[in-house]
Length: 260
Image 1 (cartoon, rainbow, N blue to C red):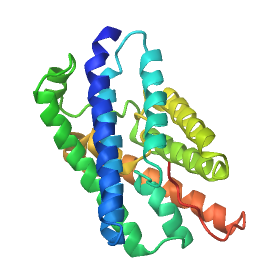
Image 2: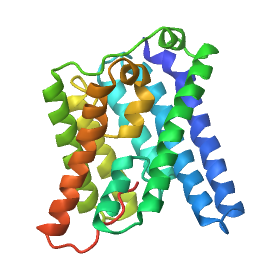
Image 3: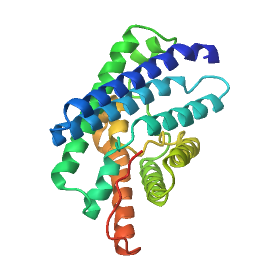
């Protein structure tokens, strides 16, 4: 695909970001008296934005020049998500950290994880509807795809890659917690871009269970055990490992919330 063909996709993603921003603002203003519902909806809208935009970004992976365009878009939209979705984790692993460390209750953590998976499914359904409209050049082809086979290596290696990337990501999140937010978002975006470059051709470098389910639902349907082990268990295990080391060996009493 030529680089000129990405503009409809960029406008679509910009529209999603603007709509989610409006919805989050309305939720904060109208539902502040209902903290649980407010928390659920904020997390759901945020995860919807990340999943919907990433579904669209995956269609732009072959835009020339490769892989520079795809990596630039990955960095740019990660910065955009981090700047617009403050206070949200958009990743079940980000909820597991404070849950394991005692920084949040089981009910609150379960509510957020539930919101993330609901949003992941809704994002996929929404993007399928948009793709049927054929707004962008890549949309018709996206509808005919089955399982995209994101694993281009053995199951064991894929498990190890997602586990390692989750450990690196979660450790970095904890280390940059005290960095100024305007700088932190760029550091996180740079890290994600580097991980995508390093492992995107092996597993997709997702390390986010909700996002993985949104991107590859047919793969989970065809081979649930393998995909759940690689894209759910591996990153979750990596997060728990980081939380355990952070609390037990480094001596920090409480886990900070992993968020944008």
